[in-house]
Length: 261
Image 1 (cartoon, rainbow, N blue to C red):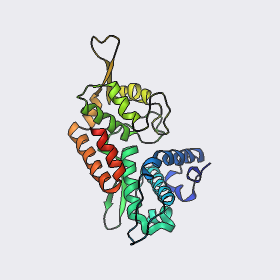
Image 2: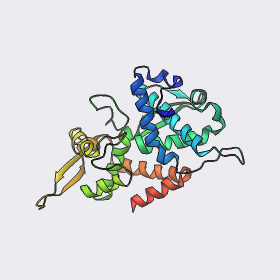
Image 3: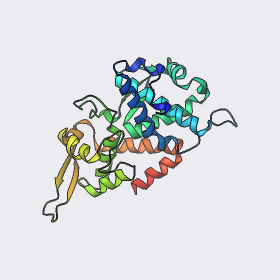
Image 4: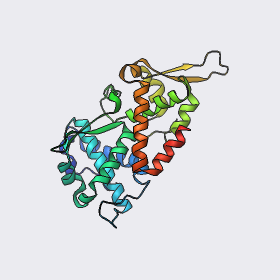
C-alpha cells in the first residue's frame, strides 16, 4: 500500500465519521485521479532558483486535495494556517503554487471549488461547482464528488448542438481516460453513471435518435440541469477554468484547447 493510501493522523479531524477503510480508499482514489495533472509540469517556488522536486510536488498536491475533500465531505471550513500545519509541513514556502494547482485539480476532476470566506483570517470553504447537487442526491451518500464530470458532459452536449450523439460524449470522456466498460477510481462505470444514474436524477436525457436503423442514441441536457445551472454558466465556468489552466498548467490548457476543437 502506498503512503498516500494510508490513513494519516493529521487528516482524521475532518473525517472522524469515516472508518479507516474509507480514509484509505479516499487517499488512494485522490492519488490516482490527481496523478496525470499533478505530473504535467514542474513548478518553481517563489524563491529564485529553487524548485520543488516533481515527486514532492505531486505528493503535496495530492495530500492537499485529500485534506480539502475531507473538509468538503465533513462540511467544515479550513484555514491557510491549518493547511500549512497539517499538510505542507516541511514545504510551507511552496504553499502558493501547491494550493493553486490543488484547486485546479479539484475543479477539473471533482467539480468542487475552494473559496475564501474570510480574507483576514484566510479561511476557506469547499463547495460544488455551479451549485450542482448531483453528489448530494446520491442515495448512499458515499463516494467522491462527480460534478466535474457532469460539467464536462454538459459542455460536450452543448458543443455538439444538444442533442449530442453518444459517440461524441464517449469519445470526449475516453480522451480523458474515462472509458465505457472500464471501472474508474472516481466515477465508477461511466455508462451506468450517464445513462442510468444521471438520467434518473434528471441531469441528462438519453434517447434513441428517431428513425435510426440500426438504433443510435443521443444525450440531451435534462430538466434538473436546467434547473440548477444554465448553458451560459457552464460556458463561463469552462472559460474561467481554461484561463487558470493556461497560467498554471500549460500542458493541461493545451489539452483543453484540443478538446474544444
